Structure formats: C-alpha cells, structure tokens
Length: 119
Image 1: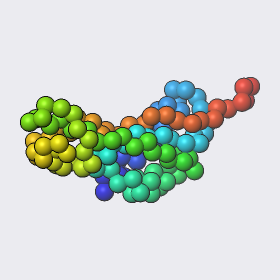
Image 2: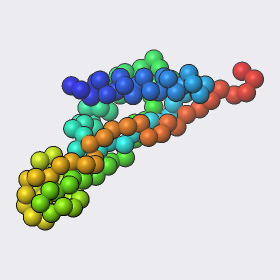
Image 3: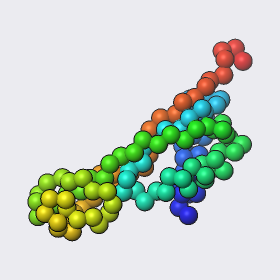
C-alpha cells in the first residue's frame, strides 16, 4: 500500500513546516490529488489518521482538491480530458494519449494554530 508512504511523506512536510514556522497545531491539511495519480483517497485518509497520531496534526482533517486528468493526443495534436491512464482520446479514439496533468499529489495548504504570544 503506497498510501502509507504518501501519508508518511505528508507527515514529514507537516513536521518540517511546524519547526520552520513555529505552529503548534494543524487543523487541516489540504491536498491536491490528480485523477491519474493512482492514489486511493480512502486508503490515504486511513493512513493519514494513523501516521498523524502523536504529531501536531493529530486529529487534523484531510481535505482533497481533485485535479482532472489531462492528456496529449498525438494524432489530434491537442490536450484532451481523460478519466484514467490509458483511456483513448475522446475525439479520435486513439490510444496514443500521454498524460500531461492530473498525475500529481501535493500538499497545497495547512490550516494551523500558533502558540499565543508570550507563552
């Protein structure tokens, strides 16, 4: 299950940001996940809850912004929307479509709390 590795990577990003920026609690982690990224969102959500225990992000919500799949059709020479890797071009039916967008996953934003001044 590569979602566990992804969740551990997210934890690393959150912990590094907490040290660098001095926040004490994460309320939400906003992710951008591409439709073609092969990330199983519910599995990632489960792993996220597990790996965040005992960290500044324990109990944080994981929010997902979906990124549509985009491919370049070689015969049509244009960008086309695709729902899955290896889908045919919706215009010409060719399978010569290379994914150009929607394969990524990244931490987009953190909703955090900082310690009150003077503490």
